[in-house]
Length: 113
Length: 112
Image (cartoon, rainbow over all chains, first blue to last red; front, side, top):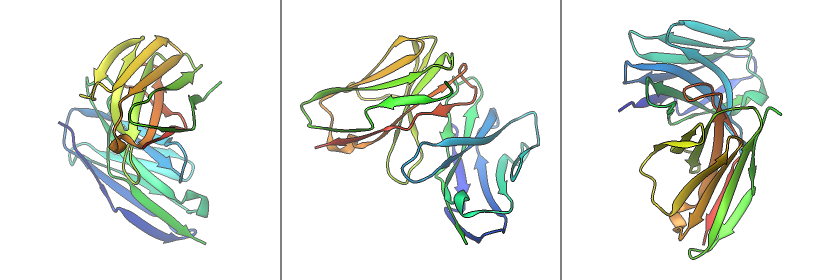
């Protein structure tokens, strides 16, 4: 079955710096890759996603890139702000498995003012 | 309404109790999901309903019993739970299966 690995597990950056979180997946049939942000005590919030027919997607300060050949995808946050501090989860959705999401283990991002 | 709501926010129950968790969405989504999340871990899928029919059961113990009475409502009935079942229970919905999933705020369950 699908397996998703996420690195790093913790990431500390200065405000204004960029942050990059990387995920690799094992099932080449996976075709949908969302990223969720979860603040302490809150719900996971979908912040950006990408499908396998696209290589890159951007939304203001966040972007996601997908390399299907290498089976990895990354989240890029530019000009980080303290409110970006949260746990970020990547996920992969295997094709034809009913929308099942396989999550990575999460990255705790801390943005220091 | 663009949100998934869940009640109650917190629930404490004994191992012999029966309780239910409720999830509601009014976005016209036809797929609904139950996830379990332990502290500092990712959500784990439990059940998926598609068009009010159970589509996926991730080999969840029978002490968890899902129900989808209509397209807007999803329940999770709990009976004879164990302390290790204590967790955050998240509901999510999507337009149809394999589309973007939106999560509710969760129910924090403690089993004593």
